[in-house]
Image (cartoon, rainbow, N blue to C red; front, top):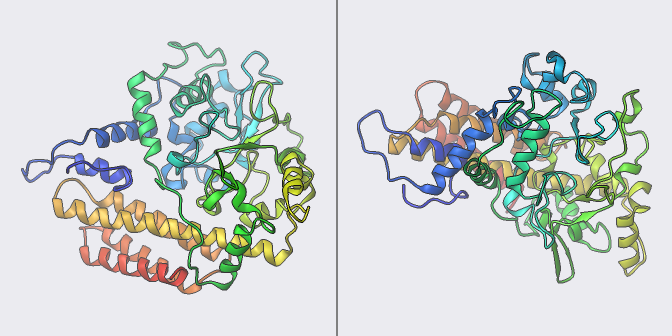
Length: 452
């Protein structure tokens, strides 16, 4: 196969190209990075670390954009390891809150330690693990998890895996290594890191794009206007890095006032939901910036899943909670006009439309990549192209769904639906190259509806 970067092939392709052929043709020479990524993939989705049955993929499933939400959770069987608190007596208290998990997709985290499980915890959504290569670095070290300190020790991505095993994989609340779970080895941590860094985009997009849709094009203008939307200051090029003038802050932390939102869904229940103090122990009430390219298809939004739709998430920045927060006050004080973020309803919808379109473009890119890689696998006669087609279908369906959810680009939605049907047909029985080529053509047609 030769040297292959993670950007060149999807993770599934890396696996399939390494499998031996059944027709006796010698396999291509091994690629050490590809092998490391594939090892990490197996660990991520299959390894329980001798714990309660959970894997990393339990909360970051490939079939749901590497995150979970209430709709996905509702489709899981009752014996799924996500629900261990419901059928394991040793984990029935202070390990999860089953009601908040099922209703709002929230997971219990003990970020300030395990010495007071009854009172010291937070309830957080599950962040996706896409585009981590260009989303977690900052001058002050890596930012993992919602608050940038989602891992013990140095906070790095390798440490994040260790913290996840201790927090989520344990058989009992004693959390004794070697008894309740086993800790990952250094070699396993290397592989898990390589796999996670291979997921999704390997570089940020460059704005502005030559968008065709009137509403999304206006949304991009507002997004990039540092006196109006101000979005690009903290989400430069719709990524996770803040840039003020020439100062690139990397993946920065801000107190945006999310915890001050009234009527947060989880807190409307009678369940106990302590305040989330963000970064540090004790925290400073700040949370790190997530990438926006992937946002529209990976809701709910913010660290506590407080808002369901991308339109609602944009509208948050026009509200009192944000504009009275330290981040909102900072933007107001640095604005030449001395104003915070003040968007009207149509402007909010326009920005959300822009985020939906760039999300769909990324889904098309990944779907196109999966289709092309399936052809490469089939031509090389090494491995099975079917998993690549299945992933392509997921991406094409995601792109269609995110556009349809905003009432955007109906011709692109139709083209993506046709592309998905062709890909499903190709995966239905014997591999059909003609169907794959048709799917590629329809995906290209969808993209041409969105951008010049």
